[in-house]
Length: 148
Image 1 (spheres, rainbow, N blue to C red):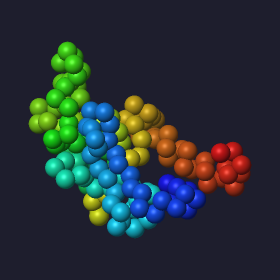
Image 2 (tube, one colour):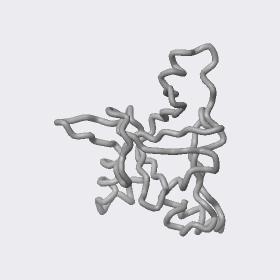
Image 3 (spheres, rainbow, N blue to C red):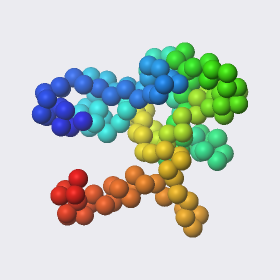
Image 4 (tube, rainbow, N blue to C red):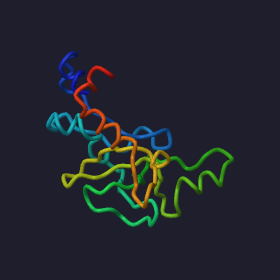
């Protein structure tokens, strides 16, 4: 994203986050947001869309800066998968929340950061290990720039 801003001169570009089940999107950064917000988050909920982060095991809402599953509810959420009621029930709960399967966190300012996928999470010794965290750590190695 920083390269797009710098090399292509697209100063007003924003990021939208969503999936087919939540077309056209759930969140978006805004043109007036600081560059750091536009490159490091997927922004705030779009008008008419509610978003929250919940613990995947308990479905309890997470506090700011705590990772959990990204849920969305609003006019944009699909009614269901065609002729697949069980798949629909697994994706959309009784209160209309779409369980995206994406791991994310909400910043205190109300922006969301996508951090991974629930299916990618590894539980080792009672700890949740996320491949993205391992990748980010490996990028701190001095030779990582030559390996990308």
